[in-house]
Amino acid sequence: GPYTVYVRDFGGIGCVVSDNSTYINPGSDNEYPVVSCENIEVCLEPGLNVMITPQDVLTSVTDNCGVDENSFNVFPNNFSATGTFNVIVYASDLNGNQGSCNATVTVNLESTAPTTIAADVNDVCTGQTINLTASGGVSGTGAEIFWYDGPNGTGNMLGTGSDISVTPSATTTYYARREGVCNNTADASLTITVGDNTAPVLTVISTPITLWPPNHKYETVSMDQLFVSVSDNCATLT
Image 1 (cartoon, rainbow, N blue to C red):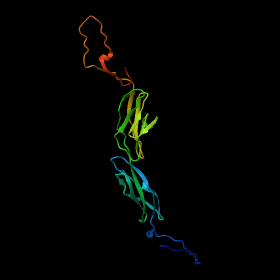
Image 2: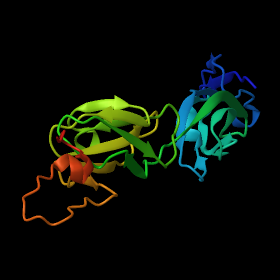
Image 3: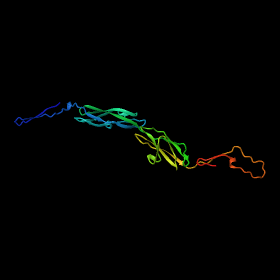
Image 4: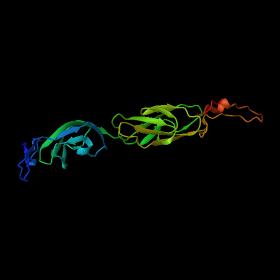
């Protein structure tokens, strides 16, 4: 409790001086620490847990007699699912008085990279439009697939979403990655070759042409008599 301290002069005059300042007996500290917290966000890897420490949430701890920094504790401190969770942080002073504060921890999910890119056609003609589809991996909090014509988010950004349409004018490698609240993933990639590497398709007649009887004369046979159709992937044939 409070004490008044008197100082006496023993030099024979007998003067007495008093000081009415309040002195605290350490054994009677009844004040709780003042503990302040802040809300935080953390990232969770798919299939794992994420842990926090009191220092992740604490902003300050003050006390009139000093703070025991070894007393800090937060509960809960281990998370295995996404969502927003209430936590309590505890802190004690040097005399065992405990204070606390409340905060929220928002757990977001990290993304993993797409595993494959598929195209409806891998070898295309100049000016031909094709569809690309990225699949596989885990889509984290706020994540979307972004498409580029350069690795690691470089070059031109071509679109977003699992499917896009492209019209390459030259052989091009396309890259897809997830970008979200927690992270940007590695790329999945696919190279589309522009060029005519496919031979024309000729469909011949099913019934043979008969040249009979032999009469030692020339007979004219037209192409239309030999083929039902002629087609090519990059050109119109006649």
